[in-house]
Length: 58
Image (tube, rainbow, N blue to C red; front, side, top):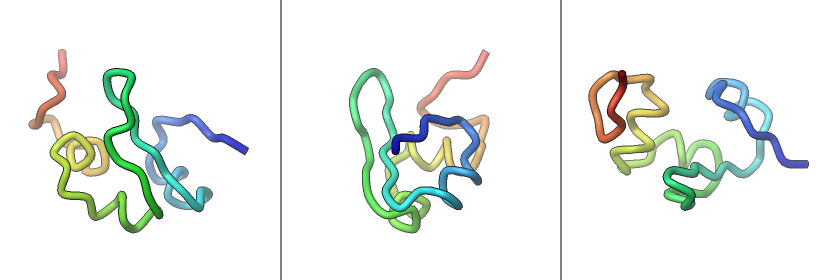
């Protein structure tokens, strides 16, 4: 099964393997804990729900 969601807590709760896509490319993949603890700035911003980072918010 593939789950596509922006609900980060659900992704980490229900999935055994996580892939983060940005700009049509996979930027991070791995076990939920590995992705949750990524040092990738895009992934950090997404996981932390931060306003500051490489993703420009309107």
